[in-house]
Image (cartoon, rainbow, N blue to C red; front, side, top):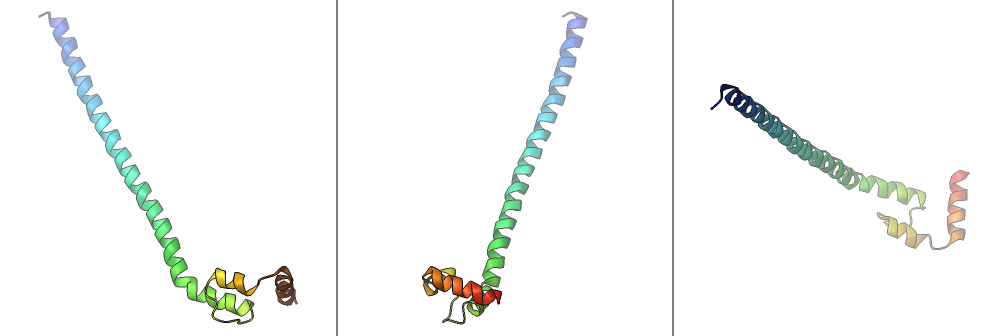
Length: 98
């Protein structure tokens, strides 16, 4: 084999090994980025649900206070049922503004 051709072949092999190493590094970085992205969204969603779970009794008390204490209103559906027409809503808002 010609010496120049052998040298070019060895350089080509060396460059291919470097490329392969770089491709594997990029693949690992992408995998870790995807894992951290999933973890990020899991923390946001779990934190929101956890905050709502722990704040629900307090929100129920505040809603109960503003609706005039009509029963045990712990959900927004109960408020909707307690205030059935627009006139009651207007009266409630007017009483809160005074």
